[in-house]
Length: 223
Image 1 (cartoon, rainbow, N blue to C red):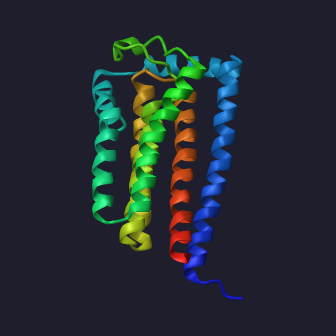
Image 2 (image 1 turned 30 degrees about the horizontal axis):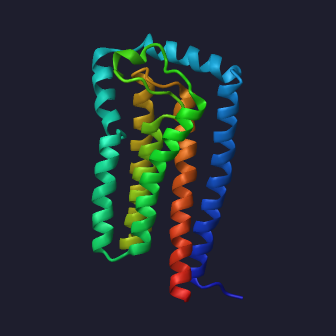
């Protein structure tokens, strides 16, 4: 029995989404348990933060500040609003809804987890942060993964680019997201587990929203 290309596309995306959700949830839960239990990962975090801080340089700090802006709340708000306007004008209501839920919900999840875990920032964070905020997970890491991940997903959904272009977009987004997380570590405002936790939570939430939009479109076309 031959499976139609559209159905293969649907099954592949949903399978990948389910796998990301399962693995991301497991990693995120494990990190929360380790942080709350003050397990070995906390000692590794502190040692890593101290090691990174001892090797920073003024040019590196300036570069990291600039890179960090790509995952900042203002940048994500700007991207979220601009993307919603573009998708609305494309008359893609389902994707527009998924986009808005991804950005708004990601902010809520970040705030809720930060408040619940209540982890203090590394001791070096005061040089760059002037407000009292908690450390786990990294909001920049989570926000950038959701923001740029959804951007690639939206572009692929609307324009249907060639495989080469699609993989180029994915690679570019991955490099940018990794750079944002690395910049937070270099600036000393997060521990490694904060960044990993942000990536895990962001991957889960983005996959939920993307998979939800694919299913909704499938049901809409079938109905």
